[in-house]
Length: 303
Image 1 (cartoon, rainbow, N blue to C red):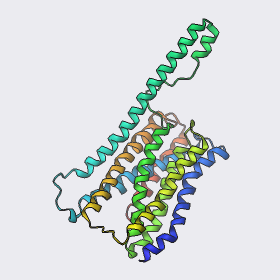
Image 2 (cartoon, helix red, strand yellow):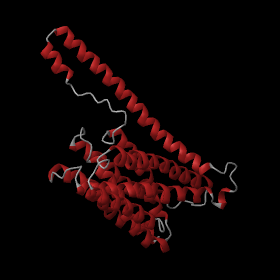
Image 3 (cartoon, rainbow, N blue to C red):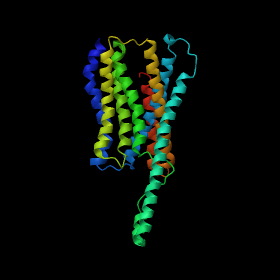
Image 4 (cartoon, helix red, strand yellow):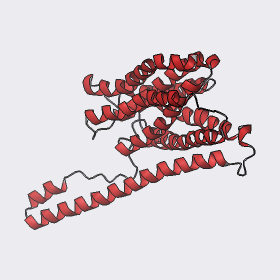
């Protein structure tokens, strides 16, 4: 029972690691006035992008395949169960993003139409001109500094973090010491990735940003509490347990694949700040991206 007893002691450490990493970028922008488009944040954001993508493929997808390949399940009737659930997760993330984008576009058109109508009713050309200057975004690409985009990213991370918390408690004593070190770094890097994206939300108040960060910081200790609660009855070879963990892993992988590849990697490099960045910023961004991919892939050996 060493793992269970130590988990109670290490929970504050894990929470502190998550809090510092997720709140750090938010507070840097707010109080140190670090520019989100500068070199410092380019390094943080691209390292975080590498972390998220590697987490999705190396950690979650691999673990889900191991779960569904467990001999306790027997032979699956549908061999592509894991990847099918991954596709479902990616599709749900896309669907939420798309519906939000269409709703926003429709609302923008209504606001623009109402503005023009007010201007023409007044008959004052100067007033009408000023009314038409109300900024209405007409971008055809959803922006990452949209709260829903970051919430989708956070949803995938939170599912994963809850499983990590449970796993940490129910792990065997022989694996616990290695696992706890790996998970602390794991949560720190994921928190850094999430915090960098939350800090970039220009239309969200500091209080809401901190609330979004708190959800991530508290979810792993919550998962550990759940693990402690079910420790005596937990059976890692139970068919229902294996299916539940495998499904959550695969679903989370799909969400993070969408968020990592589309909202983060493709957006930043093809449509965002790095599209026409200078040589230094581009080099720093590429080096940080590769570093994030490599670091999280190496951690995948243990967790």
